[in-house]
Length: 396
Image (cartoon, rainbow, N blue to C red; front, side, top):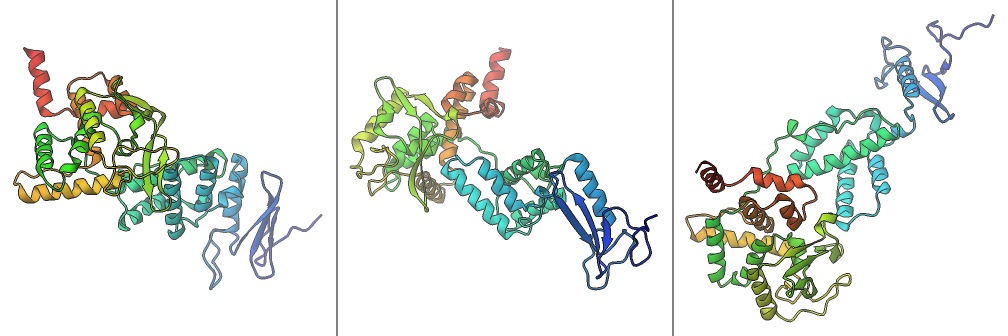
């Protein structure tokens, strides 16, 4: 009868187990793909003491139990050892045909992961508590709630790929961010009609900012996204049919300069009706427009809204301008105006139409919303004046 193998303490070793001359235990096994693998441990069972000077890690029997469970569940023992950075890169490779803005956001998150201790951790070792601690570190490093939430969503999607590929069983990023850090996002508030009138009156008569009067008025009358607005060319304005054709947006960054992208979603490609007032303002803009520079951006030229140098305006230009405009207004007026951004003007346009009970599907189309819930939320947050009017109408 074959003598059973024992360790240096006389304990019987199981099939696949052995002990090296330096005291370390070894377990050999065949993974799901038929490839020989092995793991090491300084302890045979959990109650053994870790040798002095060695890191305390799971015992060999604990590792064996985990391996057998992985094999039974079909978990890829090699794939689960990839780092979070490698998993995120794998996810990005599976969807390579994306917008430039998405590529830049991916690069930013990858740099964050490389600097953070979580980035080099094997994905099978990352627990929900680790993912939550990452969110806390991000907040401490000055990232906004929205940015952290966007990045968390990307990492959550990466782990779903790992689950589908049988690398891990659970998704550590499957938690609500507001249970970990405070959601300090300020709700977007539409301008009241009184605030809108004060804003327009101030801009119209201010020598510094009156040149932006028509742009602000058009943002309030069309509801375009600022990148769509900046991307408008003369060809996009159909005065005969009173329509604005929206099929692209103009963006700019330090790396590539100006560039053209399609709208955020397929729903963004649309035809926005042009009111008589908007039509008149657009014609005035074209009449007073300075001579544009002979610039062609990804096949587009003859842009409507230009800066002092004759180049297309950008969203960043308008955001900075509006911020300075409001500071100047509030410095000289007791009735301070709230922060006004291009998106607040779009939000105000949409809210006005919602308060007038425009058909939600029609409003969704005009706004280019991909999800009707985005549009319906505006109906759920009607102004108190709108509520009073509706109540009086119903009980009259």
